[in-house]
Image (cartoon, rainbow, N blue to C red):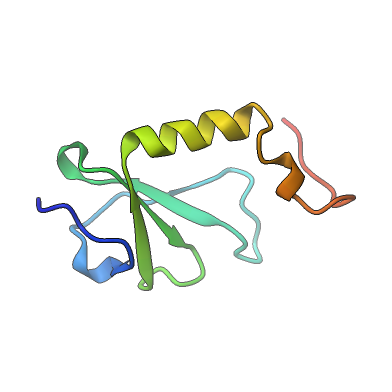
Length: 87
């Protein structure tokens, strides 16, 4: 598979198994991620617009983001005072 460009319509990607967070809610405020074939990266799309554009990241980029989020690096970007679920 040729490496897709950011902003590619999801219809131009091969069939993928999209996954969203368990913290997703019925109002559709979430993103979905899918692994690209052959380790070509991770696609990210807006769950409310599944045919819209997908952003493509390397596995290393997603790893840095997920681990940073786990460590709280982006907590300052969450609205202050907004209720948050905890496991």
